[in-house]
Amino acid sequence: MTGRGRLPETLIVGGGIGGLSAALCLARRGGTVSVLERSKSFAEVGAGIQLAPNATRILGRLGVLEMILPLAVRPRRLVLADAVDSRELTSLELTDFPARYGGPYLVLHRNDLLSALLEACQQSGVKLHTDAGVTELRDTGTDTVATCADGREFRAEIAIGADGLHSRIRPQFTDDEVINSGFVAYRGAIPMEHVERHADLRDVVAWIGPDLHLVQYPLRSGKMYNQ
Image (cartoon, rainbow, N blue to C red):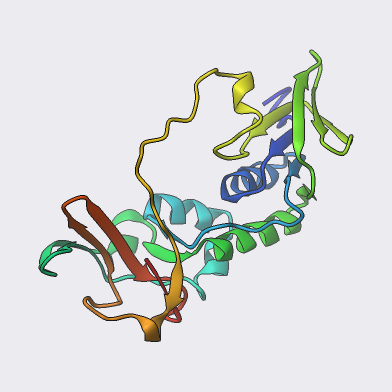
């Protein structure tokens, strides 16, 4: 904060789940926030996301939880299962999480969460800019200036980098590099009726075995299935 309780005017580079969440938190505290998204629209690439109570409690305080509940799924259990012989190895009950931890455990489509955050940002006065690929960020001593590929410039007192794995902002703070682990994860969604059921589809199931790992769960109000 600057001054007596005043939030600094803020630029957020990147309009994904992290960027919009940060923007919404600042806006709800009375801050002036601009989000710069390099794509032509705000959209989330991917499939499902699991939200534990530490996340849903915050979404509740931001007014976003009630927006996603109609589309989200509340699983009964987290299950660890043997991928070779289908044995259930252990499980964790999830239905009592609201009472125990102050928020539900949810699974939903990533874009459903992003859409709710986007709507909440619009309602809270966040300035949203698309097709704004930031190529340079510089500190003038009095403010921060973000220059976009099309020549547009945006100024604020501070900037937050939320532009993902191949961030243009991160190299200005550290010279570390992304390390390829050699492991590949495939994500996707298919209709429930096409799923061969080896487990209760009300559960989140992690199948484990030699050199393999697969997680499956219902994705959107019982209509989709993610694996």
